[in-house]
Image 1 (cartoon, rainbow, N blue to C red):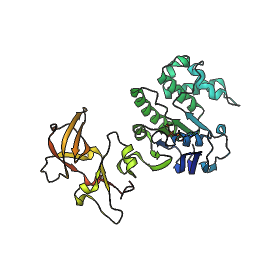
Image 2: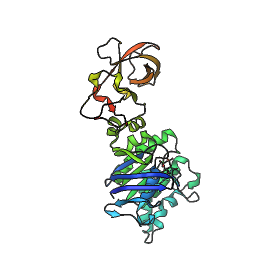
Image 3: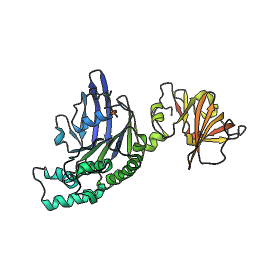
Image 4: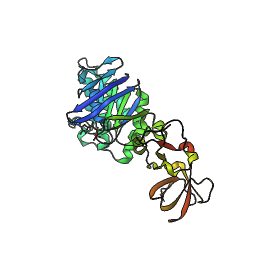
Length: 345
Ligand code: ATP
């Protein structure tokens, strides 16, 4: 197991600043997700950690050892990509054992077989060891790719959107499996994704990036409940967060302190409640535009002064389309941002 530290890591591709002064510390055995939209520098960061891309500036440390000049093959890093790197002409057994057989001092046959069996059980391919890898389903191919990386016990696991080719149900299954695997083997893992649900559901900490710049590095709940800026607030959360000008809220809800004046208020849709328009608790009034019953939850779309707001609530009395309602909000859940989009504490 290995801790990783990125210090002012920067990568320039001539006109594109792909990664900009990235500082990040990942503890031994931690599961960190690099999350951000396409092109924000996630893969470039991973490639630099793996040694496949040379930083323009900055340093990477594995434990306290600087990695500049250390070849990819010497970094003891396992890599799993979106496109499963497996040998399609080999069987599953041969694929899994490849990394051990290729070692200068390869273990004995029985030892390899034992290890293949153990890893095959973990990733769920024990019943198809004799099958040709090229004949497998996409789902099974990715399990084999995962197993192939695991068997050589890298100190660090880098996974770059490994499940994005899988179907939705299997992706959800593999997310849970990977979390179990990581817990069991305790290896440091960095997982690249643009899917906030993946990051939220698996990671110990999430590094949210935009345009090469780290926006926030915190636990999933902190990122969700206390986003550092409006980008993070918007990017994280399955139901989009509600934004509105702070001036539209009653003054007592805006915790004005010594800092900057809040310009924008935001609140997650589950922290809004629909109440009667004349209720004391109504901070805002709005008109019902759409009600989406989703089973366990309703999503209610409202129009407030030309802006759309969403409320997510347990199904109860559903307001009618066009009805005028009041909206109560939990002041403790209200987020405030200054004119640069930074959180006002
Ligand atoms: P995606 O999810 O689409 O892979 P990403 O967040 O992983 O995106 P990167 O692939 O790291 O982002 O790319 C970051 C930026 O650097 C992008 O603008 C990309 O076009 C640019 N870039 C990446 N590799 C190169 C390269 N070899 N040459 C020039 N520009 C590059």
